[in-house]
Amino acid sequence: MGGRENSAGAARDRARSAGARDLGRALRGPVRAHGTRAAVAGGGDPVKWIHRLEPLWWLLFGAGGFAAALLLPGFLFGVTIAAPQSWFSEYAISYQRMHGLAANPLGRLLLVALISLTFWHSAHHLRHLALDLGLGHIQAAVSYGLYGLALLGTLLTISVVAAL
Image 1 (cartoon, rainbow, N blue to C red):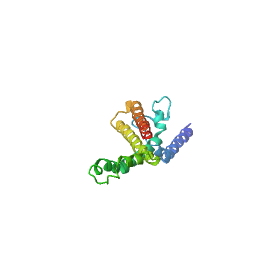
Image 2 (image 1 turned 120 degrees about the vertical axis):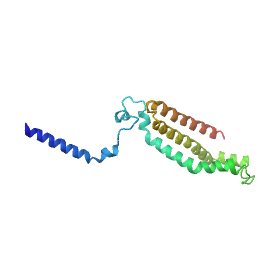
Image 3 (image 1 turned 90 degrees about the horizontal axis):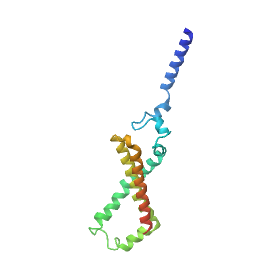
Image 4 (image 1 turned 60 degrees about the horizontal axis):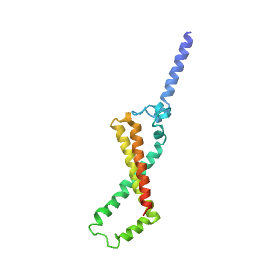
């Protein structure tokens, strides 16, 4: 009996030391403040699709951050400051020229990407802000609401730009 206790204790010690060296555990990380691993894995969690699509949300967040940080300021500067101050020639900012640029398939793609990616960036950023503010108990409503608004904004952007 004493031999078994020692062998069980030795096995337990080996398991503990193996767990300490388990790099996979370190990569899996701690339980999130807004959910448990069991809830994230599924099984009745209303936010399981949000978590399952997390790489997509981060892709849209990154692309929207790029658009918002690098492309949008130049676009807004040209439209709101440079054009009213007559820093461009009349031909450069004429309605016909701007409409021609926006009606071009490449121009349409740029407009849709610039506007809709900014919506997705904002939605993901606001979702994580809500979680940081302690609104994890209404995470499903916040997530579906914000991503739904981003989807609605994207669809409206596509319909408006397609009508040009």
